[in-house]
Length: 263
Image (tube, rainbow, N blue to C red; front, side):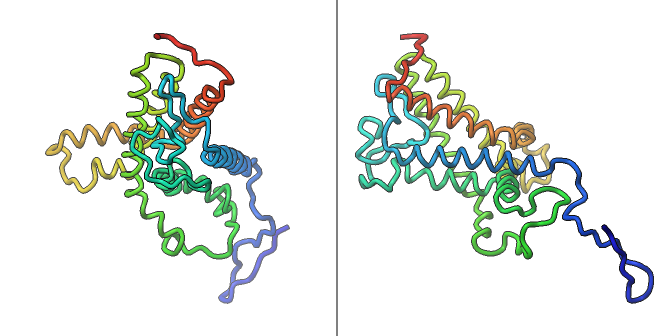
């Protein structure tokens, strides 16, 4: 039902629509799927990082990325960088790196859109009213920390280097399905990290003439191509991280054996 109102100066205003939105498609499906997908991944990851077991396969040097670098006394031979963290149940083995990885994902431009819509309904979809009466932007606590995305990108790059080193060490024991999974995960993590909008700005920002900076220009074009797949890479890496962790957990728990190709 619609009504019309008279303006103070005469004439009529736009129709006052009682319906929440005129969209007739299933606009709620995308935020719902996002809510379920992100919620399931966060639940799985939280359970895994506090299990404190089944993260290391000594025979093949497989270390799950959820526990890398492993920094508590529980790590055993997986502690490649020492054990500076106390052996306390509430402290994850990778407590130094997990906050930076979480910050990198939380401040990611795509993930902001995803969880703003799915969890905060702000707004849940285009042409659908916001679920909140007021909006102050990303200028106040806690959303002001979204501006730290560039610094989280630097930390994510360092962690990607560590994950790459883990894959190299595992490769020294031969070649198995676990090695393939580790390398696929590392490659996808690098693709997601380099496709970051901050990386694209770092590569080509503040330049007036690309012709005078051919190396940066080539890197910028490479990053720009990755950037068009940033959303897909964001979801793919969630999948590869969970798959890598689950496979290593299964090997460590002796649920199944690694399919060896060489040695």
